[in-house]
Image (cartoon, rainbow, N blue to C red):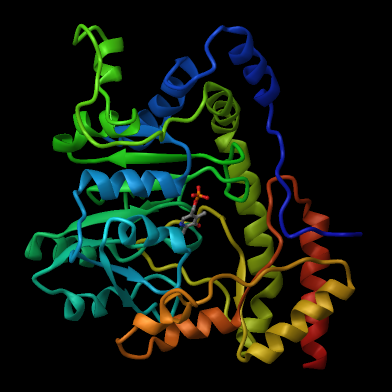
Length: 377
Ligand SMILES: *Cc1c(COP(=O)(O)O)cnc(C)c1O
């Protein structure tokens, strides 16, 4: 039995909705399917405004444009994350100040942020790794105290909460991903949430190439033209149609993923008790959206051996980020202190297969082989 690391799947009406969109005579963006997707997020999670975008990366680029990020501004982000957390801001000229992760989980160590704040700090970008909330109370308190914006990289965080607040709805803005590998996907896609009304009107202009086309289509202006900077961040109705079908099945998808995740947790907890690995840690303020199930091993060599061992049993696994402060692009510019926790996750974290169509038998097989490996190691 070959168990892939990830496999995209249809949840119901994806093809039917795409056909409807194709036959409707409108397949460019901002049609009824786009509206329905946005409405879904505004209703269910109480986001003040939700704008579908072509990717999470693009949603973060919109955020950087909306916040007028410019040369010399500083942003604070974890080093243990995907490049897209910081690249949209770097493209506007910002300097990244990297923070370390918690020792308990890969999220940004909120207690270390204040020491990194300077006169130039404009934005803090928490990343809710594996959909598990960062310490948003601490981060929002810093935001208020120092007058700094917070943009949540909520790429992995659909349907997850910090206490009662949906992730993506806490900072000034938030960005979600609908890349194939996320819980809900349409191949490539994203969403920008905007939680401060002062950014509403400009956000629609930036998404529409710097034009007031949206105001025009609502009949608010007589003709549309160039009114600001902007780019092409609006996805086609075909993608929105696919996405809507997935959103309609969010409940069953999440239920299934949580069952699989809990089965991993139960199946592997003896290894944690024996001190062989660490399993995902959820603080009391965080919910679990079952985006990733990971193990943290003790040594990089042991991780390589486990990857090879599972591969020999036809089970595909994946490690995750390489610390950005040590990346080829950034390492020459990095002047800060060592970030030992970020490096530890870079070297020792391993993700196990978890996807919507996975079966409990498959999770069982993975757990058995992982445990078998540790009887010999
Ligand atoms: C997936 C991911 C992104 C990028 O999402 P895209 O939609 O592919 O642009 C950004 N940040 C994090 C933390 C991610 O997991």
